[in-house]
Image (cartoon, rainbow, N blue to C red):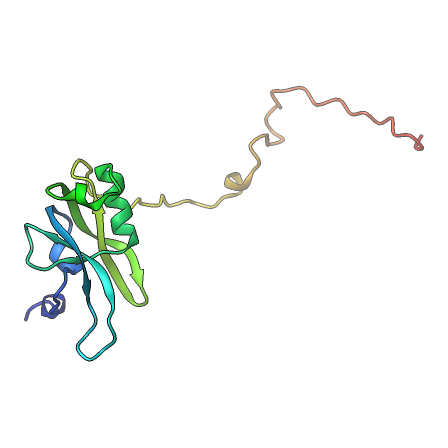
Length: 152
């Protein structure tokens, strides 16, 4: 049986279309109505690529990333330029996990950092200047000024 992600049909690019990353060339960018038939108009910017028949429904993040990577906030300057589209599993919309993100062509896929396993011991919580009693303190103790007015 096929994977259920391959059963989704869409007129627009989806995360399954780009996987771990696909280099694309920007063909055009137009504003289009993405509303379902019979629903009120929902105008969004669509980015078309030479490598796909379906466009990417762009969001602010996509546009800001492309502008930063290509060095221009004018989308006319993006035509013919390349970026990589990839499925970022850290994108979450309600119960949906994963979404299309953009990265420059010279950047490697982002790896999710592995959090090191920490064994929680009293030593992990000790202040940086803590010296156990069985070890001599390497610095002399600070002088204590006990001349407080009104106290003898």
